[in-house]
Length: 113
Length: 112
Image (cartoon, rainbow over all chains, first blue to last red; front, side, top):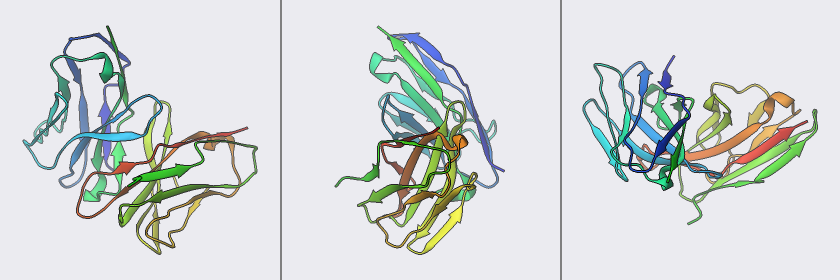
């Protein structure tokens, strides 16, 4: 079945440092790929998405590129802020169904001032 | 427009008790899903619905029942709670051609 493997962390960075959270996937067909973010005490919010190979999703300074050849969707940000502290989840829509997401285990990011 | 709402926010049950977690959305979405979040496990799909009257099992359905009598509501029932069901439960919805799932704020359930 479909699966997502992401860097588990926790990751601790200083403000303005560069961030990369690795994500690789296994899926049949051509899934869409997502990064969701969960701030403390809240539900999940979509951060960015990509629907086909070589698409780049971007939002709030974060970027990720859909790499079919390496089955990867790594999350990057050039300069993190304290407000980016959260748990980040990589996900794909299983079988192309938008209502069935397969998630990675999540990566806790803490950014210190 | 409240989005996806869940009640209660917190619940403590004793082993063997039953309860229903409520989920409602006001976006007229046809698809709704329930996930559970456990430490180090990410989110796992419990049940989902593709429309009123239509439900199906996800990855971890055992111990849970669902029904969908209206587009808006998708309750999750625990018939006989077990400590293994201690978790945070999230309801989500999507529809209208969007690929984004909208999540509720979650219900934190503890079974003792």
